[in-house]
Length: 239
Image 1 (cartoon, rainbow, N blue to C red):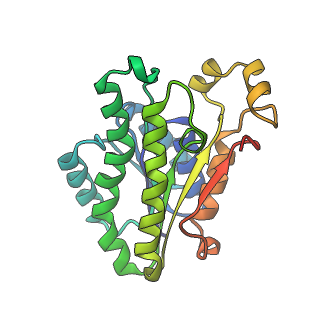
Image 2: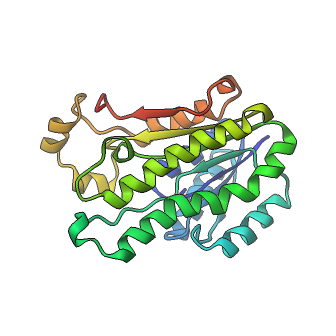
């Protein structure tokens, strides 16, 4: 049984990823900072289904808190599957964007990536097997009006993915990013009514969280051991 950590595991996509990894036989840490109760409920659902999971809560932008939390998880052994899914958006067109909006979005996606990933790497390297999967966005590829901060954060994650993949390629560890398009959730349903989806998504529907989770589950598997440094879109043919 390998041990996995899914940051942002209390959201729709994170919850689906956690459930998929647990169903594959892994022990899953489900991270939820903004909504720890939701993370706990997801863990209960996994356990009711016969899986193994534990809820964890810490601010990924707080380096000291992340280091302490990671150290606690590592006491039980190395984490070999890491899904960096934590992210926020705080939209505004650039002329009206506040510095705090820029900094917070960058800090969660990129600062959080470093704060969580870096302390996990040496224990992972010692096992000679690992999977790091970064959840990005179509916004980081195509851009999106009102999301300069979010697009910058996710594009930066693509660059970090490629560089880290090169660093770890000889150690049996793959690093990839997954870039979802419009995925059904309470937030996206409000932001993307059916007529908008019909206009911007060639498949004319939103994706499902379980479809993203299936891709992540494959990238986390033994069978995906020769796929690394890739940016894989899942967006209904948007680009």
